[in-house]
Length: 582
Image (cartoon, rainbow, N blue to C red):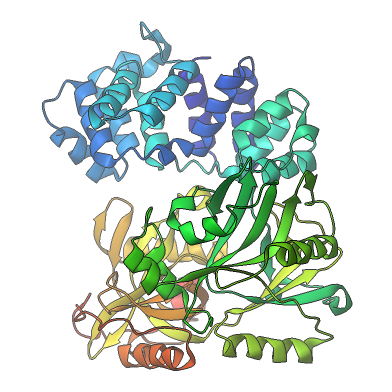
C-alpha cells in the first residue's frame, strides 16, 4: 500500500472534528493495509504518532528536509516552521510551492513511498549506529515523498501528529475496520499494550489469543478519583491501601531474566539494579505490579522529589544509590509460575502475593503493601489522615472481587486524594492543545505575585469544560501580546483557581517553585488579577509540607524573574461568558 493513501486518510481525520468521521477515515486505510501484517503494523504506528519513540531530534529532521530540498542549510526550513509553528506543515508548504503539480498528484512520484518502505526506515533507524546513517534514512524517505507524505512522515517522527487520532480513536478504527467486538479489542490492548499487534490479531479474528506474556509489559490498571463516582461506595467489598508517592513499576521474571518496566512501558531495569537483584534468584515466571519509592534510613518513605534524582539515570552510580536508597512495594501479582492471574479476583491475587512474599522474604528493598478494611466514610477519613501522617499521598480503595483490568480506569480501584491547598493565579501564557484540543487554546501557564511582578509557578490544562475552553480561546486570541507557533504570551487579565498535590522547588519557573499535578478548579470571574495569591503564600505552603515530611527542602530557589511589569488595574473578566449585564 502506498504511504500516500494513509496520509490522505490522516489528513481527512485531521480536517474534521467528528470522532466518527476520524474513525471511518482511519479504518478505511487500515483495511487497505491489512493485506500485509507488517504494513498494517506500520499504518497503526504512524496513525498513533508512535515513530516519535525512535528519538529522532529536531536537528536531524530539519537537516534531512533541507537536504531533500537541495538547500545547503536549513534557514528556509526554520523560517517556515517558526512561522507555522509546525515542521510538518512547513515541509508541506515548501514542497507544494516547489512542485505544485506534485502537490495535486502525489501518486505521480517515480518511486512513491510505500508502507513497507516506511517500516524498513523505522527498522533502520532502530539499528542505526550513527547520526549520519539516521539522517540518510530520513532523507531517503523524504526524497520519495510528496508534500502530504513529507508532512505526516515528519509529524509522526517528531511526535506532533495532532490529528485527534488518540489511541482511543485508533482503537475504534481497528474495531470498525475488522468488524471486531470493542470489548475484546480493549481487553487485547490492555494485555498487549500495542495497538499494532492488536490490529493484526483483529484482522485475523484471533483476539482471544491476546494474553499476558512475562517479559513483555502490559498496560497498568488505573484508579478513578473517588470524587467522580456517582453511586454509593460498597465498603463491604473494598479494601484500603495507602497511595504511595513513587513511580509505578512492573517486575517481570522470565527465563531467569529480570525486567522492570515503568508507567510508559519502557524498560528501566538498569535504572534500578537493587530491585532487579532481589529477583535474580527467582527461576519461575513472575509478573508483579507495584511502586518504587525513595526511602529514608528508618524505612520511612521519602517524597517523590527525592526519587527524581534516580529517574532517567540508566546506570546510577554507587554514590547516587547510597544517597537515594529505594524499595519496591508490591501490591499485585499477575503471573506466578505458569498461571496468569489477571482474570482472578483481587482476593485470589492477594493470597498469591502474600505467599510469594513469604517464600522469598521481605527486606529493605522489597516488601508488599498493607491492605486494611474500611467500614464507612468515617473510617475512610481516619485512614486518609493516617496515610498523610505516614508521608503518603492518600488511599486507594480496591474491590476484592474484581479482576485486574489492564489499561482500564474503572470503578474497581478508587483513589482518595485531597488537594493540599488551592491558589488563585493569573494566566500569563497560553498554548494550543493536542489531540481533540489541537484547534483550541487549552494549556495555560499561570503566575502569582512577587511584590508587584508576576512570576510563573505552573501550567495546567485540565479541569475546564469545552465551552469554557472555547471562550478562553477566543479571549486569549484577542489578548495575545506575543506569539511563537502555538504559544502566546497574553495580557494577564484572567484569574484561575487551581488545586494541586504539592509544591516543590524548581528551576523550571522564574518563581523558583512548581506545583505538582495542578488542575483548574474554576475561572474566578469574581476576582481582579491584583487580588491573586503571592509568592510568600506559595513558599509558606511549601515549608508546611517540608515540616510534615511530604517534601524535602533540597536547595535554595533561584532569584525570581518577572514575567510582566507592574500590577495592572483590571476589571474582572465577566464578559468572557456573557455574565455581565450591561
